[in-house]
Length: 357
Image (cartoon, rainbow, N blue to C red; front, top):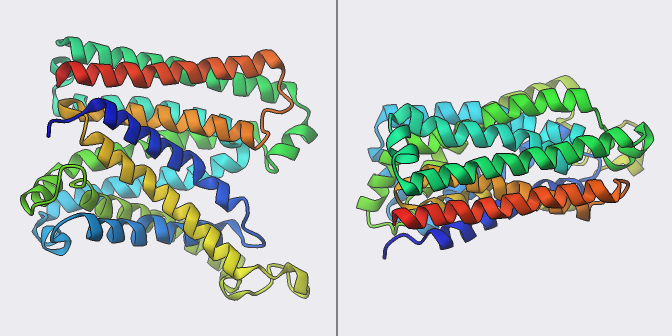
């Protein structure tokens, strides 16, 4: 069956919804330090879910992994480590800026680097993006995406400038615009390394296909390598924080602040919420690989679709969580205009891929 870019766009929307939703369950975690709930959710994101779903959906996973050249595995893990820095600071961005503004800044940078650098690195930027109608259409979609991101980010900045500090803190408890933007810039650049890790894993997809795995699922074994790199980065940082803050006891119900029964964490609820958050985080890439498989020779355009989808659903979550409740009507209209641009961008990019099919 030939690739179907429209189905690919749908898969990317599902991935964007998963990514935009992952941090919501973390908001329900009670009396666990950040490093505890982040690492707990991460175990599901980076270890349990990748291996479980790859084992279910692909043929001879262990046999395929055994055939992966050391250099390919090394590059996937290296880019995963760099991506891990982005994911780690992505969580901090949510703490300082909230869902709407945080996602817009991070993912704007991530879109540019993750989409354009792979074809530049492979030496086919001109051939794929400039020399064909499909490539130029995809490039137009990227420009529209960036315009939408800029509109959403400007709306977020204007909203925050108009609020008092107490209003900002009521919505985002640790709101800090300067610190948040600095963290977001770093996170956006590092997060784009995930796209490079997937590109480095193309030989793994070929091995999985040779083992009889269907085209929708051949990207799943690559996730096991890239996300393992993310585990290394996050586990190292969280381990440092756990040792410094002596917070490991929270996993077994020890009170976060000594001497009070009321401060003991609700373990079952916390573990379930972290499992849900971590699995949602993984599902963004689960659906990403499915979407990419439908984009044909312009698979790198999947990164733009993924980023646009995350911002669309992230902004919707921002409204649902009342982050925009104190914004002026013209600012709310502005952000919805940005969302409309992003929706148009995903359609344009899908059409560009159809032209190449």
